[in-house]
Image (tube, rainbow, N blue to C red):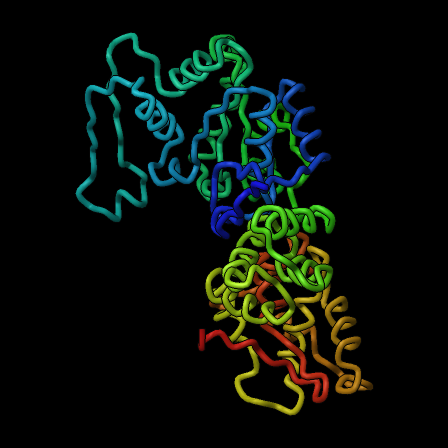
Length: 417
């Protein structure tokens, strides 16, 4: 009987694929429903969530299933070019719609004066009567959609968060789409990025009302549920790769924990694990330590180095800072107080903390005030902490282990792989 041939690990676990890996897409019904409702509202939309949370696959899957034409502009490129309109021109050039006829750039001789005044001037010259890039871009999307509803995606919002000029330009783009000339193209914006609240960027400007009244936020695209995580791991190893998994609940639990259930990180970890099990087509607990090491080295090396530099410089009887770092990894809430960390530390290290001042408050202050790459920072309200990057939490969970006999925290070495 003919049997379907299994795929290669890199064909199944695709952590950096921008296009949807259809065989590995895990339905996220609530988020998909919220996005569909947002599309029906007629407002411009904001999708936000941590890097690796699955924002791109989510909106591409929903728009594809609805048959909505989509065009993607990259705000990281706009930041590089110092203009969102310049990125629209890039899109047009790729479509061969622009007929650019000239370019001039004026610079002052004194570079420092240029930086101070922002006096670099770029002037794109067009044939008389030709549309400017933004409207031409809308027109092209309108043509491709056959006059139906279409979406212009502005991806990587975080790339312009510290650039007032580009934020003002974005506000103007949002406003222009209410103008009858621009609205006639039936194109709405879908803004995608890490920030949780676009309005906060405009609090101190006259553009706040403009943005607030025209943007609808979709609930945060965050970590998967345990069931969704289980489905992704099982689909990849069992259905696609035809691997056998011993102690499947233990394997899934470990992967879910160290990756914090973020889709891209699950793909990264599972790719390393799949390579290790490729010869025998088998996964068991003996491979997890090796997969931890390879994942740390391949995906979290910078985070590993930063944490390593903050650990106790020499062996001490207790190693309180190391215990605090380990306890930080066990924190599951996004914003936490020093008392939350102390509670975990006393629970995990009972013998070495009983009736003692564990000094967690000052240790967290040290970790947040480090001049080079602090791993935690004060929350916006200032009364709690949060991780500067979610990868630090994952790295802590993966690299630190407790010797239960001595209560000493040890790091998983990665230099020998």
